[in-house]
Image 1 (cartoon, rainbow, N blue to C red):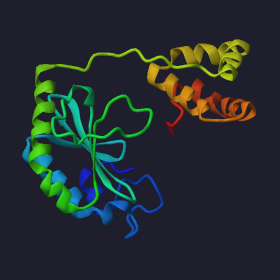
Image 2 (cartoon, one colour; image 1 turned 180 degrees about the vertical axis):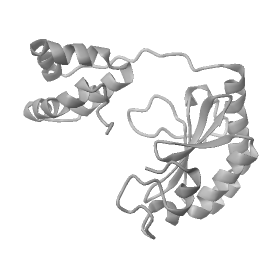
Image 3 (cartoon, one colour; image 1 turned 135 degrees about the vertical axis):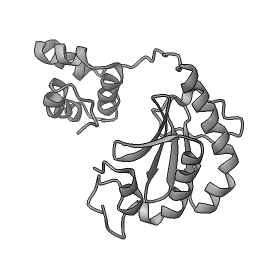
Image 4 (cartoon, rainbow, N blue to C red; image 1 turned 30 degrees about the vertical axis):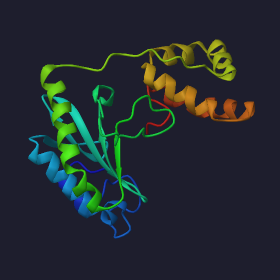
Length: 206
């Protein structure tokens, strides 16, 4: 993955085989992505790289992240639970997301049209970061699949490692296993996940 933000706009994120090729998703949306980059920098945000993507920070806090996909490019606000979204432009990233925090764009003109809104939302997020305000922690009930419970009961080492995971990482396994329709599929996934759990990683971490 890239370590320099400038490389993202010329080569891509480095997370797939299309890196540094004309087929990279970033190249499809580079005009709109550069406009979003300018908006973030003009707002006074510090540009860095996290997870292979340009990340914009203020007061030591992550504010927003840029990303590109085959069908769209996105500006994602971190700590989105704090944003009020009076314009109703924020979307959830997926069905398991708790809060809407993403602006999905499909051409550079969209980024230009939404620039005043984006600037306003960035200023709001920067204000929270400057004041040290964080979103409240919200308990989220997650139902553990029976197969996971049985595996943890039968494997003390696995149970200890799973208990040491962050709630978010634990939830990633529950969601992944819960998406399997068959019990044997869940059992096979648990066996595959064992080394990852022992290493302290979430279901989708490399």
